[in-house]
Image (cartoon, rainbow, N blue to C red; front, side):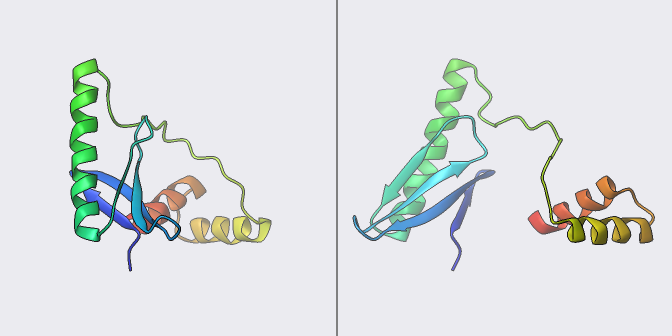
Length: 110
C-alpha cells in the first residue's frame, strides 16, 4: 500500500485519521500548506487534483511560483561508520563523496 499520490508533477503524503474516519493528504514541495481530505480513495484522488489545480491557479493569479526553491545544498548528519563506508565507496568508484551521494540519492528517488 502506498501512502503517496502524484498528479501533474505534484506529490502528496496520504494518511488515515481513524478518529474521524477520513483519508487526508498534504501537498509536498510547495511554499504553502495545502491539505485535502475525503471519505474514500476515489474521492481523495479527486480532492487532491482539485487542490493542486486550485493552488496552481491561485499562484498564477498572485504571480507566485508554486514550487518551493531548493539550493542544491544538503546538510545532514550520519553515523561516523556510515560516513566512512560512503567515503570508501565513493573513492573506489572514482568519485567525490558529493558526486557519489548525488547518484545514490537520485537512484533512491527515481
